[in-house]
Amino acid sequence: MDHRLEALRVRLRQRAWRALGLVWLVLLVFEAAAYYGRPHSLQDRLLVAATVLMFVAVDTWLITRAVPASLEAPRAKSRPYEALASILALVGLSFVLVSFDGADFAAAFYFPVIGAAFAFRSWRGWSLIPLISLAILIGTLAGGIPWYYAALYSGGMLFTGLFMVGIAALIRSNRQLQAAREEVARLAVSEERLRFARDLHDLLGHSLSVMVLKAELAHRLAGQSPELAARQAADIERVGRQALREVREAVAGYRQPSLEQELVNAKSGLKAAGVALTGPRLSNPLPAALDSTLAWALREGVTNVIRHSHATSAVLRLEHCLEQATLELTDDGCAPERCFEFKQGHGLQGLRERVEARQGQLEAGPTAHGFRLFVRLPLKQAPAAASAA
Image (tube, rainbow, N blue to C red; front, side, top):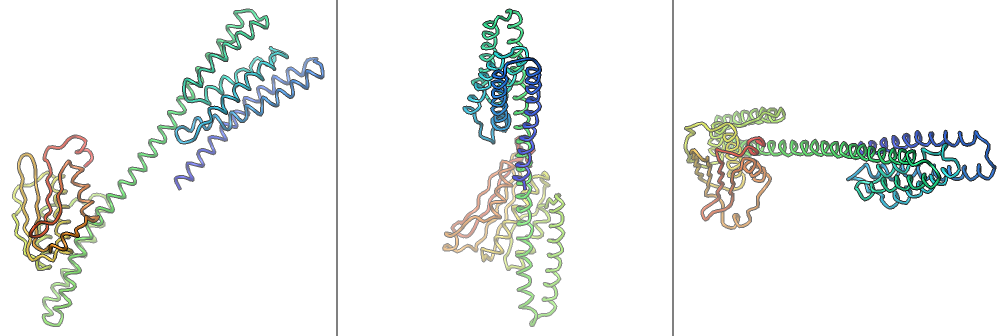
C-alpha cells in the first residue's frame, strides 16, 4: 500500500511538471504569434515554425523527464547527460530564433536557464547558467545591441537562473524531509509491532505454560482427589483471567508488570510444576523502569524453567545497591546433553532487547549444574537510554 501511494505521488508531481511546462510553452507560442503577425518571407516563416516545433519537443522532454528525475533525489535516477544535451540544444535553438527576430523571441533563453537550474543536482550542472548568460552577452553584443542592454539582459538571465537553483534546492530539501518523516513513521510502526510481539510472548508464554501444567495436574487428580482437581481448575481459571487482563492492558499500551507481583506468580507457577523456589523477598522498592524490566526478566526465566529445564529446584537472587540492581535465577534441571544444544529463543531475545535498551547486561546459558539467567541494570542511565525506555 505504501509503494502504491508513493507511486501515485510521483505521478502527480510529474503531471504538475508537465502542466508547468505547458504554461511556459504557451509563452513561446505567443512569441511565435507575434512574429507571424508581421510580414516575413515564406522561407523564414517555415524555418521559424520548424525551429519552434523542435524547441517545444526538446523542452517538453526536459521538463517531463529530466527535471522530475532530478527533483526525486535520492530515490529516482537522474539523467545528467541527457539533460545537458537537451539544454545545449535549447541554447542553440534560442540563438536561431533570436537571429530571426530578437525582439519576439528574447524570452527563449529563459527555458535552458531554468532547465539547468532544475535538471541538475550539483554545481557542475549549475555552472551552465553563467556560461549561458555569458554566451547571451556575447551574442547580443555581436548583434549590435548596446552594451548596457546586453548586460541587463544577460544579468537578468543569470539572476533568474541562480534564483531557480535556490527554488530547486528548496524543493529537494522538502522532498527529502518528507521522505525522512515517512521513514521515521515506518520505523515507529515497526518498533511498535516488535514491542507488541515481545509483550505478547512474555505475557502469554508464562501464563499458558502454567495453565498447561495445572490442566495436566487436574487431569491426573480427577479420579483420585476431586477437591484438588477442582482447586487446580480454579487456578486455571484465575491464571486465564489474569492473562486475558494483561493482554488487554498490553493492547492498550500501558502494561507494566511489577517485580513483587511476578515473585508471587513465580512461586505459584513453579510450585505447580513441582519446582522448589528459594529466593528473597523484595524489601526495598526499585525505580519503576527497573522494576518493570526485572519483572519481565523473572517472568521469562520462570517460564523457561517450567517449559524446558525439568528442574526440581531453583534459586533466585536479587541484589540492589546504589549503582546497580541484579537478578539471578539458577536451576538444577538442565542435563548436559540438553545444555549443549541450548539455543536462544524469541523470549530471551526480546528480554535482551529490553535490558540493552536500559544499558544493562544479560547472560543466559547452561552451567555445570543447570541453567543460569543473570540480568544487571545500572541505576544511573544515560539520557538517551532513559528517553528510549
